[in-house]
Amino acid sequence: MAGLLCAAIFFPGLTWADPPAAPAPARQAELLNLVRQDCGSCHGLRLEGGLGLPLTPQALGEKSPDALRETILHGRAGTPMPPWQPFLTEAEADWIVQMLLKGLP
Image (cartoon, rainbow, N blue to C red; front, side, top):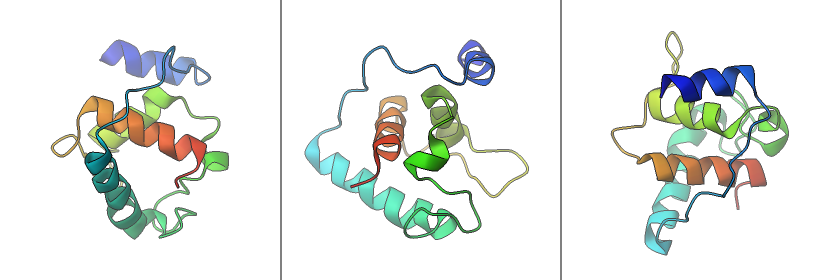
């Protein structure tokens, strides 16, 4: 895991070789609701920023998917960003990253 984080920091343009597998449709709906409501409470309901930084494709475009996944799963020490790993699998976090980079529907 530390290797992935280091790679994400030193090579921010890295992307997935294959896109993450999509969760089942019912879980997709739950995850989209989580992003809109829970993430939106800090990042703004339109994900354009608030207490947290914007989560728009433009704002995230220079970030590596791996670094974004690690932030979702493990939070950011010293900030209000909590770890979501107790509630999400790594694959679900990857899917959320993919949706954010495309522009959340």
